[in-house]
Length: 595
Image (cartoon, rainbow, N blue to C red; front, side):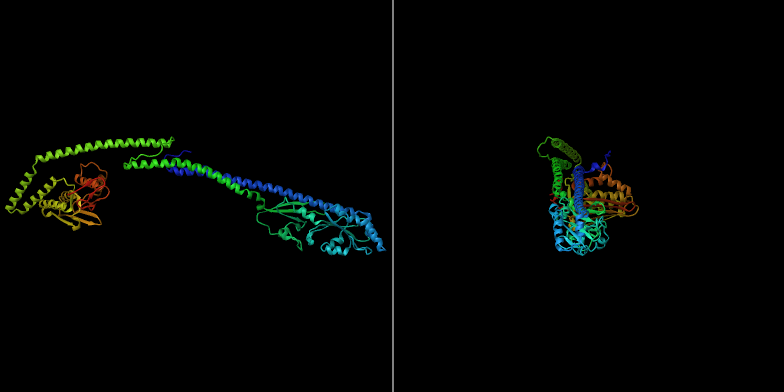
């Protein structure tokens, strides 16, 4: 990808470029790496937890089926035991006969519990009226009372059908295998009930490797047994779907298939994602610390390196910017060997050379200026020596006196004004004069022009009393009065008027020179203002440019100058200067004293 030279990327500050590089080269990769690592870790842990939980649930399934199979096996052995069937079918005349038979036959069955600890008890039920109901033998009625919901099943059951009494039917946690002993004789009803040890059931379902709740469901989806303590000891069956499950609950299901007696039964395990991710949560602090280390290490290194060159580059840039104000201060810093250190050294060497060159050139220019000033003074002195001012003044004064003697008052007045103007032009030594002196000079000039034009020229001068003593550059206004009379009024067919207004307000002297003469076009006005700003050749509009450049020399950016003119509508010159009084004239580049 090619970026053009005018593209915005090259205009971005170096500091911002470093931030962009840090963001895309460090911040985003580290965030993505840690997020992906965390997600992959969670998925692997969840997958491993699911595998472990499934194995634990399958182990519960196998152990429970084994216990049920053992109980069914014991019931099957009793179902085919001829002696037991004869014992329960026989009509006993004497009780002693029953007791002897009972002691010799059933004692072995009652001793089976120590041999098989998973069997809690073996009970027999019969409707034989000659049997004493005790010692493990009970009446059919007591069995029907215990198994209310299996009452109809008992009546319709046969030896091949196995009934399972579940804990949802009673308030104790056990399972019982019930079987009809009708293998040999059917004269009397006989049942055997093999009760499984409750502790064995608890040990099977409370598997320590499974971290959630376990539910044993029958073919209807009803809970027959559970490790969930909140729904134990229920008086009636409850469906698994009626349980209010936790959010983000994971369910694992295994089916029990033990012939016909556990058909469509299943074992369901539920565990929350929080439990599954408990191991990950324990490692969360380690992951956060690892992420912080991954952030802090490159961040600190980048900050140190960035400050190493950004600080020094900014110092070099500040000194380069100062050079435009002729401030050639050297960079005082330890000399380093990297590129920025070499740049600093070269900058100091270049600055020193420029400073030396400027001093040399400035000295030469000062010498040249001094020579030029001396030459101009010599030329002026030579010119003045050719014309004797005293002779001219005496001649003008003689003419004025003769005019007065002949009562030519107006002619004498004009000669007097010409003398004042001539005297002022020969005493050019003062750079600043009070406004009242400038006004006297303007008045003398206008009187001469009025003598020349007659009634065609009229003038008005208004000067505020507080502005009379303010100092302005010598002959700063007279060139505009001359332009107004010669270029404005002279070419006018009708009568013309020149107005001069000078006021002082808020430390600013405002001078307005206005005439109703011929004026200039808008294009010429703009061209004149442009030539003043660009300091073009002074050959044209000498008076205006002379005044403007002097004002710019004395007041670099503290004055206001404007020309407002319309063709055939006159011209208005506006000049605003800082108010200054005698002996207090100061400029940034020049200092003037007037005594």
